[in-house]
Length: 469
Image (cartoon, rainbow, N blue to C red; front, side):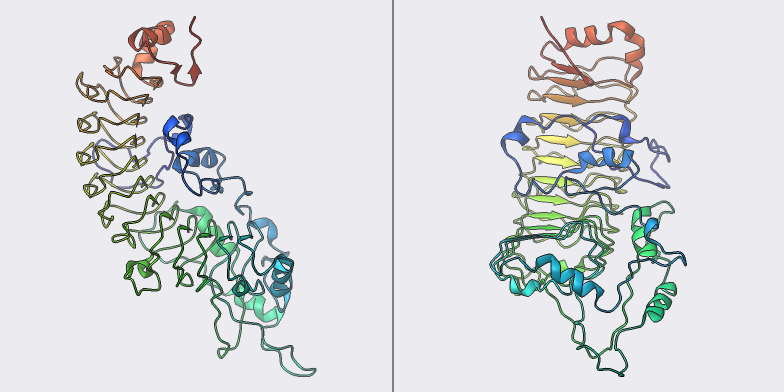
């Protein structure tokens, strides 16, 4: 059950972990656990977890996690003959297009769907009129900011326009900075983010005295805002949302979310109702903005540049934590998450399983694509039903390593260096993945039969569902 957030350009890895970590694409994705089916996450119609990412990456695209269309990836086709983007916004163009999008939507609408509309600005949408809105989806657009300056009144005949001419706009685009700030950059890191910055610059020159507008501020009834797959570099503009429950800022260009650090009751970023926070695939060098958010139940920091597990809330409310595809070398800082059910630290730089003693409610643990050489440290995690240690360097599993995991139903240890079938005490075991180990070659044609004899309750071996007589 490998969650496929695979680090790229990894350097200075701990001993035992190759510089060129294996791709997770060879590991199949398992069906959801019965627990997940019986207890679906709120907002799950819009979200997914990290386990789906490799299928997208396998097609060499960092796509959206669901069904609302593909993120805008092939940006080069929009260039004109002179090399400039053909959809640079000029006077009145964005306003006209944006006005049409919500023109027929009543003021009391509860749901605004603006996915994949190539929006570069929020101007013209008149979002302030939707005072009762509960959900806004702005997924897969080209937003670089959550603010805008209003268009000036139409210029009188013969007067000088206040918006840059086409030539000036093209000139501004041509001279736009082409390099990102070098903050812990890997040479091959985040190529699609670079596309967003370099190939789709948004340039619009305006007079300085125009007042900046923040259309999302103060939407008192808003419960969910989805900004997945844009080009945002700041969370500024999301202030005073007292009923916000779900915030998705995944696949943006965030290097910091320091604004969220102030979560005091009088802060504009308090979000007292926030339970779901998604920050996948940004450029965050550390975990921040969540230390005191004890209402969180679902937290995703996968696909960033995090090196240590820190600054997490001390709370029994957090149920799911995803930290895949980072640069983490040690499991630590989880002691206060006593209610955690799902933990993913896949595609990092771990060499040892540790720091899980207090997580006695843990149901699913994903540690694939690391540098583990042994399986240990799970004696207290007796509620585990799913364990994924695929794509590591484990040569053997001690007879007692899995003895206490009597509820285990899925065990993934594919693509290691195992030469013997591990001892598994659980009578509930239904799925085992052991392909890609030396034992598969050694057992040859007896591979499946030996597994069936070893684990009588098994219904699936690797990707094969068994037909028992």
